[in-house]
Image 1 (tube, helix red, strand yellow):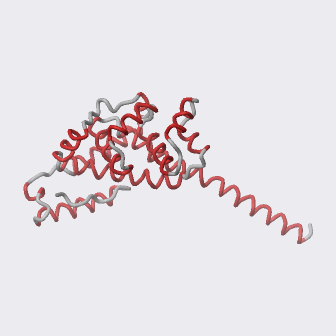
Image 2: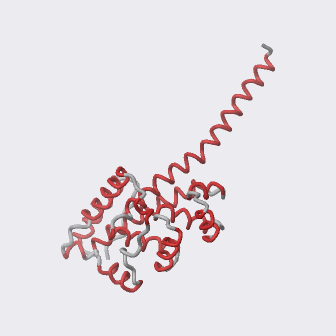
Length: 227
């Protein structure tokens, strides 16, 4: 075998490996995104968590909660799939176009792939959303009054914010969501006056310990100090 031919074979093998690696990257990004999306969907099965998710979506996507409920019910999407739909809208797609594809019995991943959606960006944003949701669970159980007031102002009822697709969660995902929910709920449990007042030494000490636990716990980020 000539040296030139050997070089050509090596070059071809390297090029093939690069192409294969590049082809695997979007798939890997999609899998990372779907992992985060499944957590959102599983978490939303609880009424209190669903209200928290609704507030989080409203804040991130700058949309009234009544509109979110209407859109979600019209398309029959669980919160994980609805997140993808809303991300696609930010990238130029329209909800009517997405709804038309759904009526053809296409899944949200299929619709997103057909639109060449940025799964890496979706994965990053979904991870941030889960972090925000965890943060808001903690804040809700530390100071529930503002959330109750907002729900009343928004006329939001978690019992109405339900679609059949909300049940699309595996038991493993449900258990992971439950553990995450309970972790942040239990972390907010101490509610003495010293902790409730964020300017006291007790509050600052508790907040530092809470942030250390949060960072150690996993993907979530420390919450803002309690107000």
